[in-house]
Amino acid sequence: MHERQDRWWITAFLAPYIIGFALFIAGPIVFSLIMSGSKWSLFGSASWVGLSNYVALLRDPMFRRSLVNTAYYGIMVVPGEIVAALFIAVLLNRKLKCIGLFRAVYFTPFVMSLASVALLWTWFLSPNFGLLSNLLMSVGIVSPGWLQTPALAMPTIAAASIWRNTGYYTVIFLAGLQAVPTDQLEAAQVDGASPWRQFWSITLPAISPTLFFVLVMATLWAGQAIELPYLMTQGGPELATLTAVQYIYMNAFQYGNMGAAAAMSWVLFLIMIAVTAVYFGSQHKWVFYE
Image (tube, rainbow, N blue to C red; front, side, top):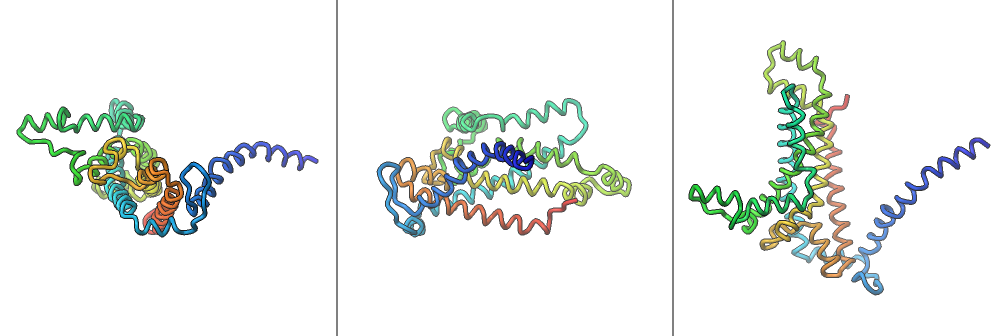
C-alpha cells in the first residue's frame, strides 16, 4: 500500500516536468524532423517530399556560405573568449583591494541585452560620428568602415561578442581557480618554480574540467550566433556576416519555406553534435579529473 502511494506521489511530482518536456522539447524536435521532409509554407497543408530538402541544401550556395561564416565566427570567438576570460580570471584571483568591484565591472557587459551591445558597438564604430572614427581622424587616419567592409565585418562582430561574453566565462574560471590546491602551488614556489611553470604544470591541469566546460559552451553558443550579426549588419555586407541560424530564420519566416529551414536546423544540429563528440573523444588526453 505504501509503495503504491509513493509511486503515486513520485509520478505526481514528475508529471509537470514530463509534460513540459514532451510539449516543449521532445514534441518540437520530432515535429521539426517530420517537417524537414515536407514542403510547408507555414500556411495551408504540408506535402511530403522526403529527402528533397536535404538534397537542395547541397546546391544552395547561401547555406554553404552561412556555414563557412559561422565556422569563421567560431574560430575567432571561442579561442578569444577562452584566452581573455582565463587571463582576466587569473588577474582577479588575487587578494587585492576592491577586488569585488573589479569582478563586477568585468561581468557587467554580460548582463547587458544583446540589442544594447549591438547598438553600443554600432555607435562606437560608426564611420560618421563614432568615437573610434573620431579618435582615428584626430591622428589623421580615415576609419576603414568596420561594419561596412566585408573583410572587417565578421571580425568586428566577433570582437563585440568576445567583449560581451568574456565576463561570464571569467566567473566560471574564477570558481575553478579557487579550487586549485594552494599547498601544491606553495610547494612549487618553494622549489623555485616560476609563475608560468606553476600555471602550466599545476593550475592549468587542475582547472582542465572547467576549461573543457567553457570550450563546449562557447562552441555551442558560437554555432547558434544570430543576434549580434543580425542586429549589427543584417547579414551584410555582401553576405559576409550571414550565419547559419540567421539563414534558417530567413527561410522560415521571410521566404516561408519551413521545410527547408527545418532541414537546415538538423544539418546544423548534426554538425554541432559532431564537433562536441570530437571534444568529448579527446578529453581523456588533456582533461584531468581528481
